[in-house]
Image 1: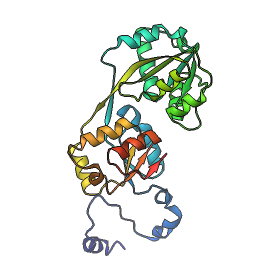
Image 2: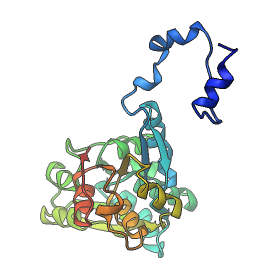
Image 3: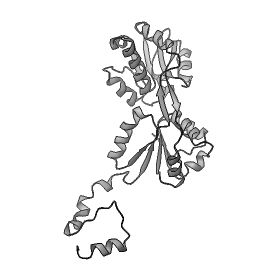
Length: 273
């Protein structure tokens, strides 16, 4: 009651911020506790993807009841040498296929086209392949339709399922440190492949407060959305063993390639989406 609430709060060592409910309304909690029944309620989730992409994942995590903590392990930057990308843009009508392996590649190419004053309709002639739904969604945001997306979201499955590409010209805009397997597989099928660096991923050092949160077990789940997020977070730990620094967390990776990178760097992987 209001008569003894002060004494009870003092005895329970309640400190601000706090919400105190007095009266019969407390009995309605079982009917009104909709938020804390969500699957990730009370979980702190580390979001390591770039600032340009973090908000979408964070919003979805909030919908599931989690508390997302955004500590981007990477930043997206233009290529050191923009000329090869510009040359590829000028040749767009000559390609039969345009293959995107990330949403970052989509944005990097379209943004550079906009800077050069190149009409996005230049992307209308080549057929377009996307590695997965997030990449397809990025393309749809520019009004571009995807002609092929593999059922399993890996570069190996793009090469295996795209069909006959013998003597076809293929443009592959990619990250600076992207694996070579896709281009090699397509060339093995007879395609003429132009690889062009569309963007770079730059490492961001893990902040001291992040290291403290990890060390104190204040983070429940760590998400890795690409190999570069794994490499750069591990590098940002500055000598700490990944198995120790992330040992208290559940680790979730998007895709088998990201998971393999994590395991190779000493990170235990619990979930692969």
